[in-house]
Image 1 (cartoon, rainbow, N blue to C red):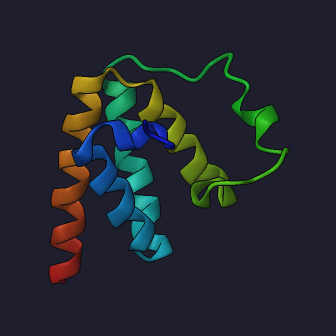
Image 2 (image 1 turned 90 degrees about the vertical axis):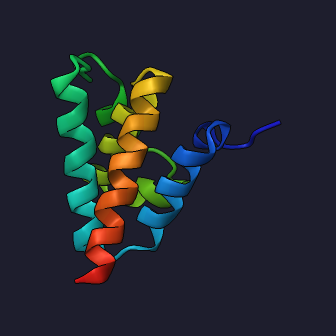
Length: 100
């Protein structure tokens, strides 16, 4: 049994873990990558309760920043194949950032 939605796929779990350990500027770049990928694939948060929910209890590490929390809502809404593709893109991006 999985406790977190992103642990279902090991690639997504790894991408989230790497993103969590990155500095805030890199996290913002990752968030932008996720949102752009989502929008390119027709995923929209219009009508989402995210804006209202952000004012409630913040339990997860990514809930502490609205931009990052929003990107994770996009990631969560993606179909599994797109989630995995996005996770691979994140991993590649984070590895490239590490080399800099």
